[in-house]
Every structure is written in C-alpha cells, then in structure tokens.
Length: 429
Image 1 (spheres, rainbow, N blue to C red):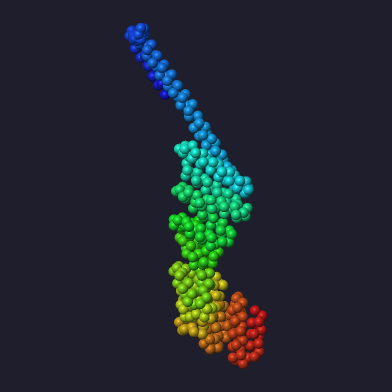
Image 2 (image 1 turned 90 degrees about the horizontal axis):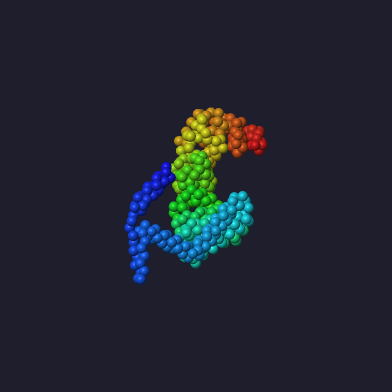
C-alpha cells in the first residue's frame, strides 16, 4: 500500500512539473561584460539543482575521507569488545564443564581485552560507545571466574590475587552489586578453607541490606557454627526460619539442635539459666529442650525445684497415652526426675502417682513411682512396682537400677538369697 501511494505521488509531481515547465517561456539573461548570456528559466533551475547535488556529494566525500581514522578506531574497539565478550563466555562455559585451567586463561584474556579497550577509549577520547559501568562489571565477573577456577585448582595464591583485584575495582552502582556477590563468594571460599573468622569478616563488610539476604544468612550460619559461636548461630537460624529459607520441619530441627548446643555449653547453673532465658517462648516449650535443660541443671548440681518447674510444662504432654514423644525422651525425663527424688514435694508425688495409674502398664512410670516410694520408705509398694517394672523395662540403665533397688529391698528384709539374685540380674543387664 505504501509503495502504491509513493507511485501515485511521483506521478502527481511529474504532472505538476510538466504543467509548470511545459509552457514556461521565461528567459534569464546573465550579463558578464562584455558578454551576455541568455538561458531559459527551466535550464537555470536544472543547473542550480545539479550544482547543489554536486556540492552535497563533494561535502559527503570530504567528510567520509576525514572520518576514516575515527571509523578505524571504532572498528578496532568493536573487534576488541567482541573478543572480550567471547573470551568471557568461553571462560564461563569451561568453568561449568570443569575445565578450570582453560577457564582461568580465558578469564585472564577477557581482563586483558577489557584493559586494552578502556585504554583505547581514553587515548582516542571516544567514550560515547564505551560503557564504563558495564566494563567494570565484566572485569569483576572475569576476576571472579578466574578466582573460582583457582579455588577449584587449590591455587590459593592466584585466587587471592584475583579476589583482591576484584575488591579494589570501582564502586559504581552496577559494579557494587557484583562486588557484593564477589564478597559472598569469597566468604564461601573461606568456609571451604575452614576459616570462619575470615568468612565473618567478609560478611561484616557487606552493606546492611546485603547482609540480611538469605544467601548471606546461610553463609553466616555455617561460619558461626564452625566458629562455635552458638548464640550467634541460633539468632541467624531464627532469621532464616523467619525468611522461610528452610522447610518448617528443617527449620525447627536446626533451631532445636543449636539450642541444645547452647544449653550443653553451659558450665555452671548461672550460665545455664542465662542460656535458657535467651531462648524464645516457642523454643522453651519444646520437650527436647526442656528435658535437656533440666538434665543439664541437675548434672551441674543446680536447683532441683527449678528443674522440676521447667519440666512441669511438658509433663502432661509427655505422659498423655497417645503422645508422640519418643520413648528415649520419656526415659530421659524419668532419669531427671529420679535425680531429684530426695527433695520432691507432695504435688509431684501426686502427679507421678496419677500418671502411673493412668498408664498402669507403662514400665517407666512403674519404675519412677517405685523409686519414689523407695525414697519415702514405702517398702511394700516400692517392692511391688519395681518388681513389675523390672520385667518390662527396655532401657538398660533403668533396668539395672530397678534390680539394684530390689536388691536393697531384699537386704532390708534380711533376704540374702533374694538380694544375691537381684544383684546377679543387675550385673547381667
């Protein structure tokens, strides 16, 4: 359609020129003493148009001749830029394929090409086609590729050389984002070298926003765990769980493990109470943490009443008939309570008796109730409960203690033969 319109326009122009110039009888006279030149007006118009076209073509040719050096420089810069990007892409491909030596060489080639290109732009003064920010970003990435290849080859000297060159690059906004990626990668290299202090130092140099990214928090979690900084690792794990970096089950498992490490690292009751108070309310409600904290407090010869106050919040869930708490955790709870039976009060005795009556076939509860009766010198009831428990206990420690307690009860009755049998069964466990 556009071609047809142009054709109609040309026909219209031709008709208009024919109508105007066909009957034009005007004559133009040029005086150049002693000469006189008479030409038609139509010829004068054609001569002027031809002169204009000749001047235009001459001017374009003149401009083209004098722009040849600039065009040559631009062409050389274009070739260098193409070679630079080709070397960078080849280096990335070889790195992904595991050809680290070739990747390092090509990355170094890309850096050399970029330096040559920037030098050419500065000397020629033609910076219109030279994007300094993108060139800086590519140089950073090329240094990163070379450092990554050196890390894979265990060449730490070459890795540190490229890393320092990358970190010393200009802090342009685009390059700054790439610089943050280089710092995160360097932190991971430090972790691979078992240098958590160096990794934490690199993470500390990041801006506040970058330091709270999921990747940075993951690296910080690994670094703090390697450095045995359990409190900081626990805080980081909470942030990762808040950002949903892990599945809910995995996040709970990680937080629980770190909390257990924090409680286990306490060396006196005061430190243990401080560590316990530093936990969140949800963490202090986890049965595993509650029982471990109480067990640790009893092992450190702390206040038994405080340990039982911690255990009170998990006693009912653990002792429910359909509770999902593992048998090992129940056994540990029984052992913690057994350590404090000397100072146990009437309310706890009532709880133990109620739980044993609610689950009369639970050997662990029979054992705990029997040991409580033994501490209260209720010999007959203790004998009955411990005898029933000794036949069904699965935990070796509780089984052995039950037979030893029965041996003591037999000695209390002056039953030497029964005590010997009980001691023998305890030794066989």
